[in-house]
Image (cartoon, rainbow, N blue to C red; front, side, top):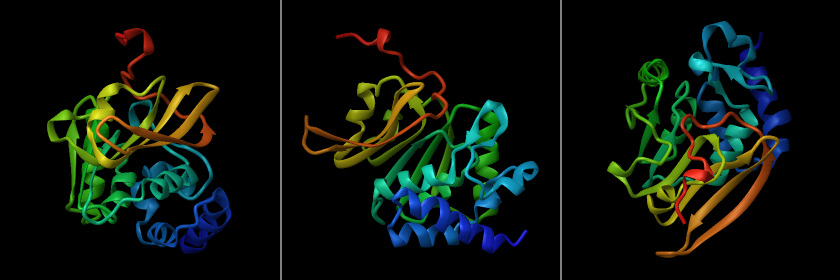
Length: 217
């Protein structure tokens, strides 16, 4: 396989056609080598338009999904990002090139170790991979400029809304299969939030995701 040709084809045929037109994002996908974060058994799938299996029943999301969420996050060099669900560390690696600091929370010990090892081997030093349950965010280091949630949620818990700064953004997928919506939620004031629906999708639920019946109104 010609890896660089496969990477180019992924960007031009899958990602650019999915309304990812930010040249900085497209360039970053050339720089951060996706195959370095794919389990060895699935290297041949590194640039294919599909989810890739990870340990603990999890998966790497499709390249076009990752790229679109990265574009919509619009991360700046001075910003701090919270990622919920480290997976293989690939999204954290992408975010690390755009942010000042990335904190990624992983509930599965095997995946935490995998992400940490991948990021260290890749020479990335502005990402902290922490063990924990991020289903209600990660209050200890809040507020954040950006929160990116890698699993779907039936509803977005209130805690996430309070953990971003004014001007901050939350990237999430909300709903139940087969009707889930990727959203970017921007905090516009102390109590005001602006929600933009990006696209319809279906991804695996976040472990321990809060269900509406647990909410108190």
